Length: 433
Image 1: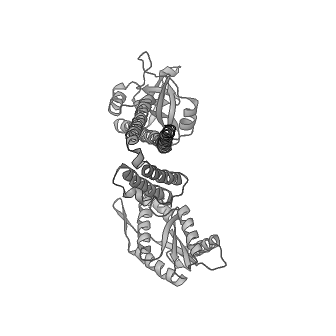
Image 2: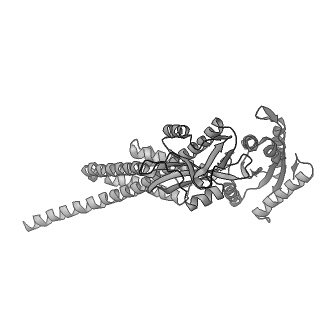
C-alpha cells in the first residue's frame, strides 16, 4: 500500500510539473503577445487619428479658401481682444458658426480657428454649453505651431479639463510672410482609449479561453505549440533587434491553422519592414544605407566591381520652373529607367541622395560598366518625361571608378564622384571613366 501511494503521488507530481512546464510558457507567450499587440494597436490607432486630424485640418483650410477666396486678416473694432474680428477674403467669418458647425457635423471632430494664440471661432463648448471662444492655446502649442509655423500632432492636449488628441496647423498670409493664427482640429482621447482598452480586453479574453481549451489537449500538443510560438517569438525579437535577414522556421508558415497564418503575416511584415528600411520611398530604389551594406557584401565576396555616380543634369530647373512635383516625376522616371538598365546585369542601383544615383556593376570591369552606362545614357535621350501636359527631356552625367585592391571603398566612391564633377565641368550628358 505504501508503494502504491508513493507511485500515485509520483504520477500526480509529474503531471502537475508537466502541466506547469507546458502551460506556463503558453501563458507567458500570451502575455508577451498581448503587450506587443497592445503597443501596436495603440500606435496604429494614434497614427490613424493623426492622419485623420491632419486631413480634416487641411480640408478646413481648403474649405475656407473655396468659400471665402482671399487672405486671412484681423481687424479690431475696439480696444479689447473681444473686439477683434477675423476676416477671410474681406468677409467677416468670426460669427459664421453655421459653416464651421457643418464641418464638425461631417467630420465628427472639434474645430477651432485662432488669431495668434486665441480662439476666435470654435465648435468646442465648455461644461456650461458655451463656446470656448476667447480662450488661448497652451504656450507649447503657440511656440511650436504659431511661432514655429509648423503643423504638429499632439496626443495629450487638455482643453477645458478634458483630454484631446489634436492637430494644429498655422494660418499664413497669402505671401507666406506672416503667421496670422492657427487651425486646430481635436478629438476626445477617451473615445480612442475605450477602443484600445476594448481591443486589449478582447485579446486577453481570447488568450484565457485559448489556455482553457488548450489545457484539455496539452499532453498531446503542448510541445509542438510551444515550439511554434518560440519560433515566432524569436523571429519577432530578431526583427525588433533590426536583424531583418533572419528567417522564420519553415514549419510555421507551412501550418494550415491560425499559427501558420500568423507566421505568413510575420513573413509579410518582415518583407514590408525590409522595404521600408532598405528602399527609398520616392523611387523604390535601394537607399544609401542599404547600398553601403551591399557594397560591403560585394567587397567581402572578393569579386571585381565598378561603381558609378550619376547626377541628373540641371535638375534644379525642374523644381524651380515646374515645381517639386515635376522634380519627383523626373526622379521616379529616371529611377525606373536606371533599374531597367541594370536588370540584365549583376549589381544594383540606389538613390544616393537628392538627384544623385549610385550604380554598382558586380563582376564587371571598367569597360563593361562604361558600355552599360552608355546604353543607359542613350535610353535617357530617347525617354520623354511628361508632366502637366508638357514633355521634358532628361540627361545625366556619370562618373565611373573601378575597384582595385589598394583603394578603400570610400575613396572609390569619391573617385567616381570626382569623375562625375569632371563630366559636369566638361559639358554634362556624358560618361567619364
